[in-house]
Amino acid sequence: MKIKRLSLWLIILVIVVGGLLYGIRLFAVIFNGYAAKDVCSCIYLSDREQESIEQNDLNSFFVGLPTNEWDEKNKTVTSSFLGLATQTAVYREGLGCALINDADLQTVKNQKYNPEFPKNNPDTIYWPSGDKMRDTLPTNINIEKLDKAIADALNEGHTRAIVVAYDTIFMKEAYNYGFTKDTRILGWSMTKSIMSALTGIRIKQNKLSLEGELPINEWSDDNRKEINLKNLLQMSSGLQWVENYSKICDATIMLFQKSNTAEYAISSPAKFPPDSVWYYSSGTSNIISEVIKRSFSSYDDYISMPRNELFNKIGMRSMVLETDASGTFVGSSYAFGTPRDWARFGLLYLKDGYWGNEQIFPEGWVDFTATAARKSKGEYGAQFWLNSAEDPELPSCPYNIFFADGFNGQRVYIVPDYNLVIVRMGLSKKGEFNYDKFVRSILDSFEK
Image 1: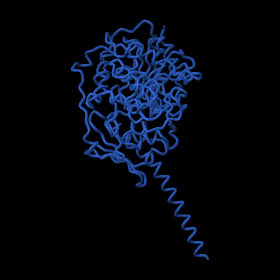
Image 2 (image 1 turned 30 degrees about the vertical axis):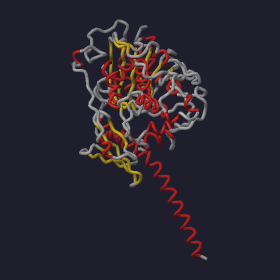
Image 3 (image 1 turned 90 degrees about the vertical axis):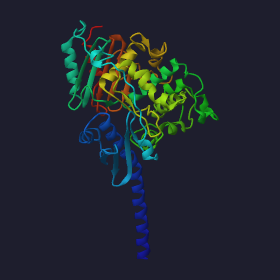
Image 4 (image 1 turned 180 degrees about the vertical axis):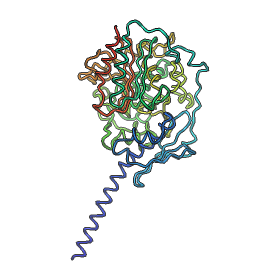
């Protein structure tokens, strides 16, 4: 009898331990993937030391658990926790880092892109197309107030960089220790706003349309075929999706377990009719990336389009839009650029899609971008956030501010009333940085 009871307890113990290990492994896939990808990208794109990345960027509990091994020869970072669910990211020239997941390492490693850059020297070209600064200070700026506002913000909430651009004639910047004007910083979900810009360019080229049929054959036999590009841009597709980074969900599976992020997002079933609900979904942005990809007959044309049609035209020399292992831009999350380049991106919107005399976007695109999605309660436009929400991020600031918003406090604010673009990059947890106070203090440094 005792032997039977002991055997029963041993069976229960094995089941419990097995269940725990299975659960730990499921989570380990996610946080190992996060660590491997982040260390790889920050080493190769931001030129940062591994120790600094681990001590700062991976300082929260779960993502700080893995051991990260950097193989400089093969340009890989492999992360593992207790030997469970090892994840590897590999760097490809011009394409950034990608998690391998179920893809073949050598195949992904062989991917590359050799971008062409303008031949001119940015140090000889005036800001914002270049990096040469004007000697004159606009008369409507209180420089003492501005310096204090920037200094105060730099000392709050792990701020890494601030850029304030007034029109196209003045720029002020400041950086915290370890970061400079040449340091690329991950924009996280500000990447979604770049995807919106690329969509606008393809529409201007008459290769896509807001309300036409999408090139997604996977949806042709069900009601998802009613979804259009406008629905995707406005996060109103009605697709089933869970975006909750405190648990294993669609968003974390897509980013850290799938070698083809867009394919996973496209497989989402319909839950509601298009334009009947608003729900923030990173999957939607990767579907947009795939739609853009399918609008090209050549992969080379797709992969070079952001550089040739956007970045080069407005001086964003540093920007790298990373692809996943399948070679598709991760439009939800992975764009690295210097704070100056993020400011240039904002200035393009401040100038209604014009750069000098060249019209980058179709007529009315910026107005569309800053118009609230029907079901968003004034909170969201076309892959940009709006300050016209019922509970705005910047309650003391103009309601018509719209902005790119990324995890850990990345922001590009476009402020039409003051002719300003304000960039803030950091590593802030929720509640660690007062965005309203920061932007208001910057605005108070300028006369309208």
